[in-house]
Amino acid sequence: MKHINELELCTLIEETRAAYNDFAEYTPANCDFAGFAAMSVARFRKALHNPSLTRETLELLIRDGMNHSRDADAKADAWSSFMASYVTSVVNNNVQS
Image (cartoon, rainbow, N blue to C red; front, side, top):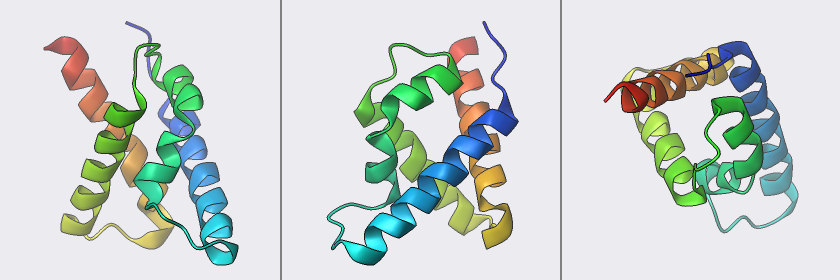
């Protein structure tokens, strides 16, 4: 199993979040961040070293992480780091199972 670069994943999440915020500011969005992030599934496949990752699985993973961030009261300036850590942990646990 290849090592997931958490910093690279954090950067990807930050970039995706910035794009989502810009998109949602000027366009009535018919999706949340998880749905928007799932549109970038190819980039997440690469970052997570998981070529079989589906858009639906990514969306569920991100949405679950968003729920956990609310439960953990993740601060806005550390949200991307929290999400990268959460996603890495879940993916690593799924690979080991």
